[in-house]
Length: 382
Image (cartoon, rainbow, N blue to C red; front, side, top):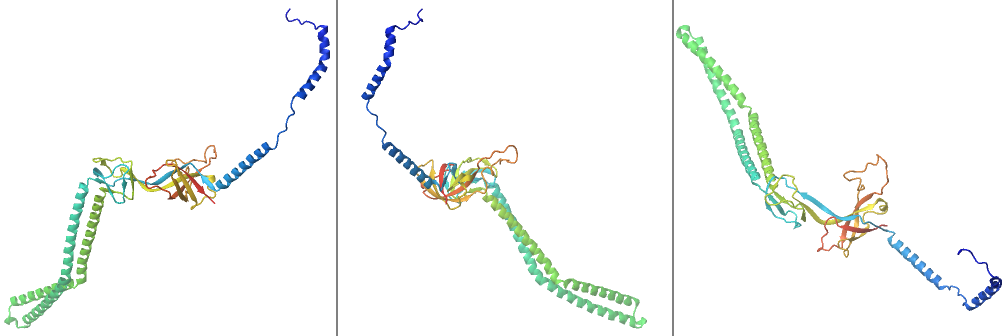
């Protein structure tokens, strides 16, 4: 069979016995032919040492230059932005601004149909005129009362004196009629004298009452003074109504509360707007940076620290600023749905705290900073 081995011959066995000596000789001959190996020198070690030294120096330099710098990429431009809304309702008759237009404080932006408010203003003016006329009438009556009431008192005193004289005369006539011989007079004369006496007494009492009434001069004048005061209050009320009407009329003109840029305009001429309806937003050109630093980065950060700012939109623009303030609360605390850490399983998460950074210099007047641009601030802390 093919897999059966052939037993070695005698010559092969003798050759194998002599083979070890021959192999030894061959090895010695090969050792003499190969060149002697060289040991590695010190140059690679020197190069390795230099590389390690350079790496250490670079690491120390990087640590020394960055150990007082806190940076974050969670930072954006921010500014004051208000929603412009009218306080009057009506149709827009004039629109004086365009999208992204820059306006100054007090500039007229939108005009709402003022006819209803103008009519109310005119009505309030008429009410004020009527109240002023009534006040003048009351003041004239007061001036007349200060002269009239003392004269009426004098007249009442004169009438009292006349009534008293008539009474005395009636008494004397009555006495004469009663004192004469009954044959020298008649009962009719006696009755007439008695009636005249009673009439004179009544007139005298009436005159005394008139004097009593006419003597209350101060009360009568005070009554006219209160009438004047009431008319003055009516004038003030009418003036207040006129001021309100003028104020409502002024609401038909929407003006800029401060310098800024018109954004997100959603109104056109002819639009029917209601009080409180959003017309557009006004963004202030005074831009700052809101940087959300980790809570572990705030240990040495304080207001006044210098900040270097890089803007992603304009990498070549280098800004300088300072830390203005640190918000008293993390972003999650003031979110619409703050975390409820007292319920469920709790997992600790590093919180971020907004830091306001004011830009001091480096702004290009030809490159405005819209809100929400990504920036990278580097705060130098002590």
